[in-house]
Length: 214
Image 1 (spheres, rainbow, N blue to C red):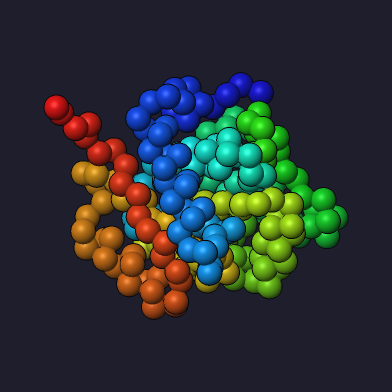
Image 2: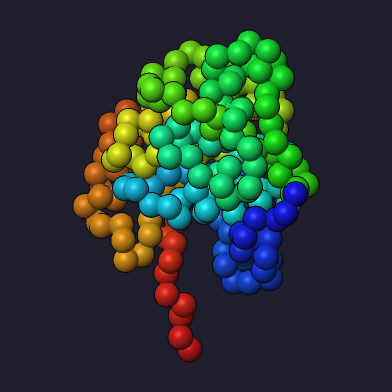
């Protein structure tokens, strides 16, 4: 499998790659009492960089020697299969409908040691209903049993209820804030939306920031 065009793979010594490794370390040790093993990465409003941010973060988790599963739970506009160049015919929605898939998840080898990917699969007519279902709880449990860390992609917080519904089920949520695009009021509304349903926000990551000049 060809390696995707992710900075953590194409230029692992770059400052950006080091920033992802620092973020990974901060997340891994953010709370001794409530460690993070399942994490949702999303954005306040529609932002294509949140999926790429998650993919890079997943690489760094895997590179640290931890078994990692990246799950595309964006059942509206999934992007992980495009980033990784993998088939999207089977995935999360297969596990929703097929009992045998629950016992044997259709995980895809990423080409990165310790990293597997569960693509979205065929898009359903009712994403929010699937995300909020008990079956989703079962899927999360199955995936947790197979990895040290399970990282989830989802639609943006303000574009659909999916992120809030999924965030309730996970250990934490990381918000991706894009410099020059994400508006302050959008970030505040997203934070309030998640906090209203008692989702644990573990932090925010700033992308597309200009390089410092010395």
